Length: 339
Image 1 (spheres, one colour):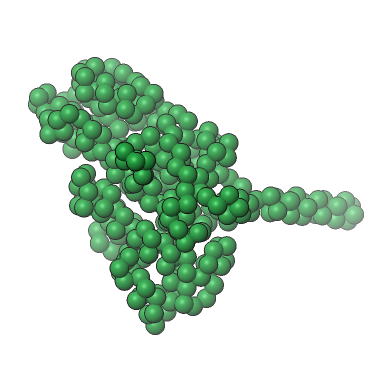
Image 2: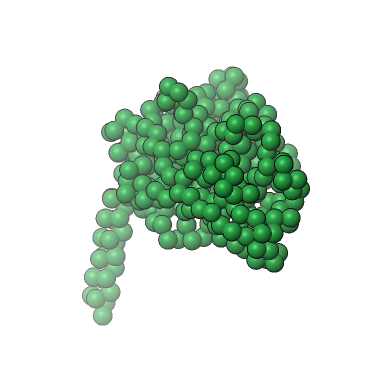
């Protein structure tokens, strides 16, 4: 019996050793390739959209740029892969992309059935409704009998069904595969309402011929925590992507910005020294360099800087921080301590 137990123990140890050996490969693959492969949307202003020269910008894009900065000390060593809602998970599962950073809601089913992990929340969102002002609708509770445009392959369809059923209202679903198709259908009058995450509604409204003729209704009918995803099986890569976001949040909380990061790196404050690599080897424990946070902030900025220029007061969207403010400023954004 002891011998059998020993054999089983050795076999289990061998399996764990093999798993460990095969797991920690994503970072090395990226380093050998010389480029990060990042899955983004097909064009959502404020989150991930290209200009006419193919330069990508947005809150989701900045996460990938921050990862690239941490690895290469260069925020531009990235191949951006535009993905539809339907194709995004397949691209991650197949290895076509290293990270999915594309306005994707964190749910239990996605966390357990897709062979992937969410690494944090970049934007706390919720589903809303966009309507033409000419309809003179001021509340989603006035939408009984409305036709509603939705995008397939998203969480919006179930949320929509739950909301209308819960309020004893009838509706007609008009579904489309792509976001642009959905918006065009709404604008052309094929439906009364367009529903999606509120952030997406603000972004898509900018694409309409007359944005001022449309408004987002006040009701938020769901919780939509949006964040990046990585494949199961590589804890080191999971940690790198997760702590890249946390580094940006902690940098904002500590007052570390693109402009002052070099000066802050000289600080004698213990928490600042640890974060910026002046004390300890936390970056090296991730497989990165001691100055990994300096690289991120210098090239991309802290979380607040990214939020402001992409979706906040410094952007065309002008979305207020709300829940996405820091925990000590009335929001719920919170980065675990770097120590």
